Image 1 (spheres, rainbow, N blue to C red):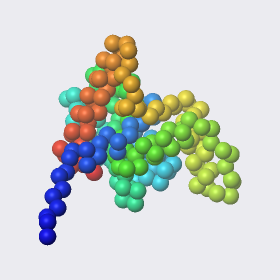
Image 2: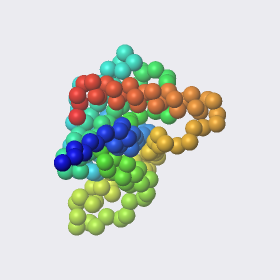
Image 3: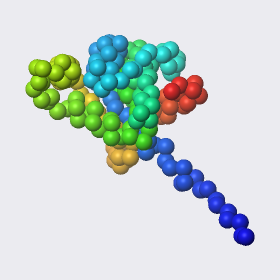
Length: 184
């Protein structure tokens, strides 16, 4: 009987960037309040961990692992005294990294949920009423949410390209710290 030999190529493992999504929440609502709202809106259990040490500063970090959907959530708040790199992500704003096969779908849902006026609630359902009230509050305070597309074509402007490169370098640094720390 002849042995079959299989050779694994790097492409066989898939591109890890396909399993990552980045959401920016442009709000200066305190992190613990924002996390509590996200937990109520999407039935998450984001909890605070030790600050992420980046650029010589502590960046507040909240995590949650959804074992059912196999998605990891990392919410990071940019400290007000952080460096001025990556202008898309201003001090006080939050970024959520979603990691897992459904990360992009979930991120798109959250982005659309924040961007679309919520339907009027059924007053007999307290969960729907609470969802409506939280989203309405953020929409009334003009809280934009952006889904960052790492596969977007490179911008033609050198300034925009530099800002994008700074932001993606910041993503890489954060992901490296999370991986090296074994944070799940």
